[in-house]
Length: 362
Image (cartoon, rainbow, N blue to C red):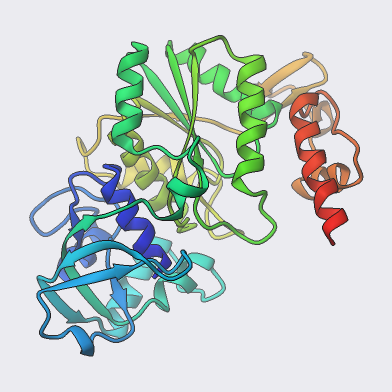
């Protein structure tokens, strides 16, 4: 599946250390229920290679894992087969409920997980390449090992990571500045998702150009790094937030920004569930990385600056410059930049150019 290919890329790049292969069913269920394998190794989600039919490989010792996301389906990894286990509907339901907190087939993560197949192939893998991420995004895609090495070369000691799957507007930029200032960080890693996104999302090369322009103009030299990673979003909200923190630790970050409804979709999760899970459910001592809790940030008309909305109790909603994603897309599509209190003009121009190109193409 696409998800298994992306997970292979994550393992090959060191993001999922110490995992070196796909879990067996007992470990997958244990990670779903308790965030640890049967041997006690912490991992926040099951990492399974689920397939529809395993009859052709029932006697095989090794199997070539072909990449469904690249033309011609080249081999992305070789897996040593330790076991092939049939997964019952009840086991799929259990893992789905624990990880996604819902079994609603309309949830994109649930839909993806429950349709991958009912046979789990477990065993270590040898990753041969990093799929289309390395070829399509050569300037942005980096493995966890490469980022860790880059951090060491820059001499950073306290590093905060920021996850994004969208272009960054002024509120996101200021949130990163806030986190760096309050934590005393000497480095910021803007870590961009390069995997499959929802229809209508802005393509990675456009996001990349917009974010790099923002960093170039509005961050001090050698204070921020723009990188990307290859992964298929689970949209699992709180549980995915834990996974995001875990692999940011593996790439060398000491802190990770988690805002409202991190990694969520629709109305499946509470606004701050992705923050409270770290105190309420993550086993004590499981991770060293610390969470920087964020609320929505927006421009205050009263204070003439971006603030965290929860830190402005004397403000009414009208005291903030707030624009919906739909409204912003509409403005950009019409060739007009959002107000300067919402978006940097140089960033807005890159997005306007993209939308104008889309309009001409259609």
